Length: 31
Image 1: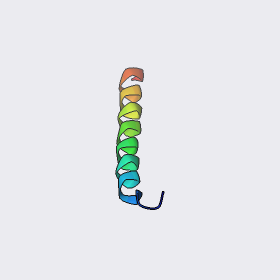
Image 2: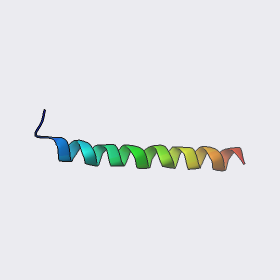
Image 3: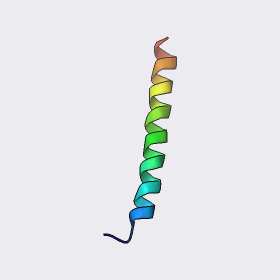
Image 4: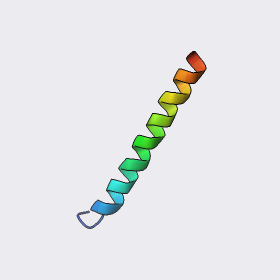
């Protein structure tokens, strides 16, 4: 489990970008 720190970090970055995209999309749909 301790040898996949880099991979987990990259996955977290993609997850944050995806959440940001969803929030922007929701705001665009709302307004």
